[in-house]
Image (tube, rainbow, N blue to C red; front, top):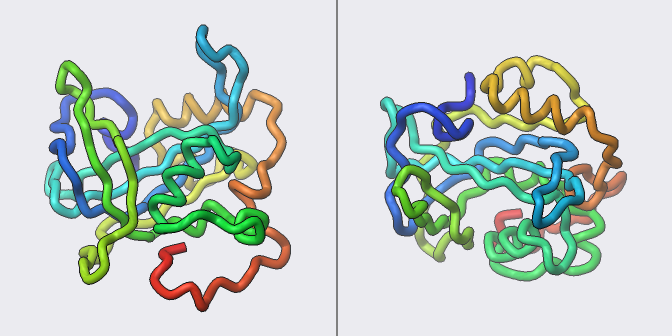
Length: 199
């Protein structure tokens, strides 16, 4: 398994069509502490979430979409906003305290896609909960989960060269684990009575 051109940002590929698609989370990649931009110079801990799109095909495999997030569950964070839309309700304080990002692996959702102005890239505009009564096809790709603390393990070596280079930059930074976003609590709350909440 290696990440395709559409995930690594290069190569010739057909972007996922604009519109709303059924999707399933198949990969979560911790990118570590990434450099800031001229507008926002502070380094931030980042994570890449990748979804397979059953209705789109790229070389006989499902289409893939990705979105890079700051690894934060602050009330104004983009990751938290998308997770709450995805699960169909806001987190309670207890759920936030015990939440592990790994929980979203294999969870289905609906994704709205818009293209860049030049039409070369498909961007995730929004993530939302699956409508009641709508099913998601079975997963095709293997699930992949990587944390920066894992170092150059087997999963790392299966990733694309460009993604490994990004991880190497992140691993060189000094970043503390974010327990509420990337690591399960020692005793996770039991949410088994939450009905159709996907995570």
